[in-house]
Amino acid sequence: MSGGLNFLSKRSSKRGISTVLGAAIFVAIVFTVIFPLMLYMHALQDLYMREASNRLGYEIERFNEKLEIHASTGKPDALGRATLYAYLYNPGHLEVNIVAFYIESKLRGLTPIELSTPIVLAPGAQIVYHIPVTIDPDDEVTIRAATARGRSYSAPEVGLSVRKPPY
Image 1 (spheres, helix red, strand yellow):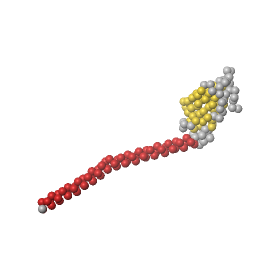
Image 2 (cartoon, one colour):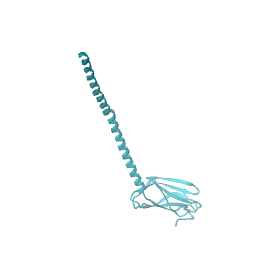
Image 3 (cartoon, one colour):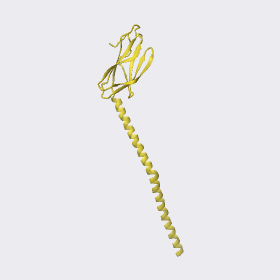
């Protein structure tokens, strides 16, 4: 019998070692796989929150951007064609960068005019801009200005023509 008891005691000590060894392997897995994964997930969430905050700030700026635009024609030439002028005013508290004009013409359709150098309007600033387009005597146009923040502003003078000036 004593041989049988000796056999049981060796077996129970091996069970204790395998439990400790299993716990050590589990802790090693946690520290080598799960803990770095948690750090990576936290870094991704931090990046997402920063980008979401930046986008929110951009949308707030975009919402607060203001621009007033009015259109007029110049003196007609001998053929009756006239140049276009845009009166631009920034009543807001943010700087406005105008990057393009779009001329909607009854005869020519949509004419985009992208500016090589944006027009920068500080808060409270105003400017008269000569748009490098001439309109025919029978043409009617509407002028729109596009900003760097993606907003579009339309002049209230719809159907502007040489024969129907805004003044």
